[in-house]
Figure 1 (cartoon, rainbow, N blue to C red):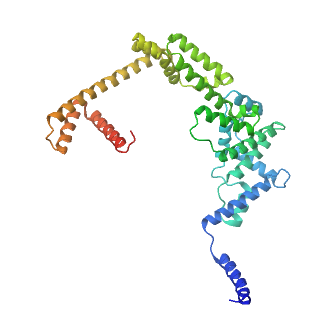
Figure 2: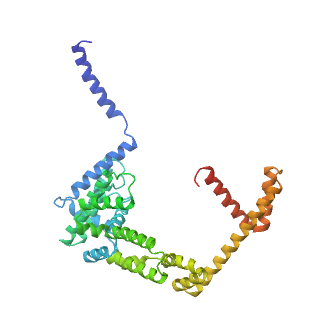
Length: 360
């Protein structure tokens, strides 16, 4: 084909492609993507404080996130400093309010141009959170919160691209994450945002070392030193940690700390009951003892049945599989009762499933 003919065909091909693009119907995904882009662009324009649309954008954002009795800036900082409020959790609460909510006039404009408006995307949600912070708090406090928020967005982005080396210990992993956080945040801001989480991890490490190295210590002294160490390690976060700690968790901790001495003295039953009364009161301790007794009786019944089942299998090796199962079901029901026998059978089937699939 000579060059003159080729030059004639090229414009025709372009026209045909343009015609096909114009006539070819958009898919639902294409429409959603187009509407999403239009919505995000309009939100970004409206979020500029110098734009004519900002006032309406800010009011819409405030109505989306505002609640009664919201913390003042001073309250929020103090609660974060002591671990009673986690700023990252508060951010995600705000983000949850964006779910399924298309944003104000920007969404309406996107709807009129491109069909149904999509759900609010993360970019617009972040813009609205920033506008909310600017309106909810007075200067300069609002700018401080906005800076924290923007730094956290930078941190999120950095962590999405950050690949931790494999085979790290928990301590090594945490050290790298802390280093990454302080590449984005100042030390004081990092403490405000992540301090409670980081301090809890460090405290757990210190307590694990203490437990490992104190097994021979007298139990009363061991318990006292454990909780003293925890209080010292948690520092300003200790009150918040203690306020949310379930009584059962503290009970289990003390039981674990006294366990070595209780075994040496063969006093587990008596001391366990005493510790239960300390944390739950005499009546609850009595009920717990009754449950222990029932569990022990059930365990003994099962052990007796399993011994009888093994003896039966040896003495009746010639039975078919179906006959053997039927006889064992009868034996199990007579020894354990119908409900307990059925529960035992379900447990055995589940364990067999785990073994067959290499899960146990």
